[in-house]
Image (cartoon, rainbow, N blue to C red; front, top):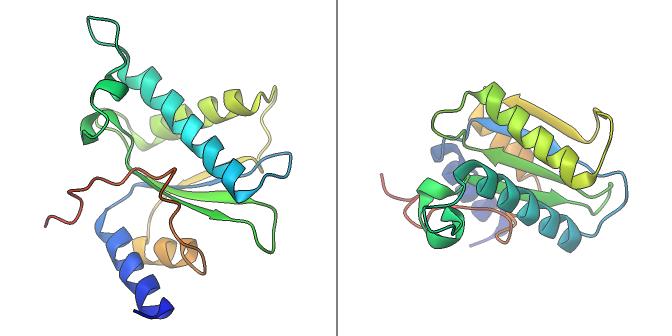
Length: 160
C-alpha cells in the first residue's frame, strides 16, 4: 500500500473512532521523538492511575486490567519534530462521566505537574473540542504516523 493510501486509510479509521478532543502539547526544552513518546506514556499512565485508582487489595486497576478499555484513556498520539520543535498532537476520547471541559482540565493539570511548571504557559498545552473530525485527522497525519507506543487503541476498535 503506498503512503497516500495508508494515510487515507488511517484518516478514515481515526474519523470512525469519534475522538472528542484535539490537544497539542509542547515542552520548554527540546526533546527527541523518543523522549516525547516516553513523556506521553508517563502522562497518561499517571492520569489513568489517578482517575481509576486502586481496588480493594491496593492494586492499581490500570495495571490489573491492562487490556480493558474501561481503565484506559482512548487516544491517538502523533509526534512531530522534523522541521519544527518536537511536539505532540493527540486525539482523545473523553472519559465516561466527564465533560469535555473537565477532561481538558484534568489533562492540563497533570501535564503541567509532569513538566514541573509553576505558571501556566499557553504554548505548552492547547486543547479544543473536535468539530470537524476529518479535518483534524488530516492535519494530524499530514506526514507523520501514529505513535503506537504512547497511543491506546482498543484491539476491538474495528468492530462496527
